[in-house]
Image 1: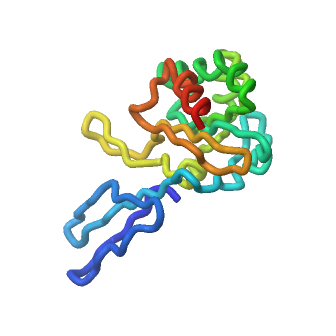
Image 2: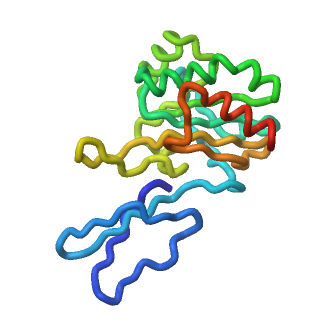
Length: 195
């Protein structure tokens, strides 16, 4: 569902209670009205959307493809950047330990299929990477958010990981600075061993 603008035009207008999972993440005053940006996100206990998107080879992935086994869906900002590479390599290096526990891994970013193919080949990543160039899945999952760098505001990916059970239900979430990119697989293993 992502970030949705809610303009409030007059004195009588109010923002009714946000939908499940909604948080006001930014306010703007354009001189004529105040705009609230409501960020929709997944909660523990929510089902993952059915349509995930195409992987690096154009194969359309759906959440129903994973029914019957638990899996990890992680979102990262950009292929071949230091933090994203460290995170992907952490998952790669622990893929056997994750598989022993029955878990599969899927990554998502807004990079192109060609970028994902190069990234996977360069670092021998053994899991699919979903192409989300239009950030549809990121919006549905609530990880496409307003960001600020060097005083400039823009929309971007909130680094996030969802641990999903055999029925496609979110059981645990990591996001933002709580993710240690170099040791993320270890963080995940610690959680799943206690689920």
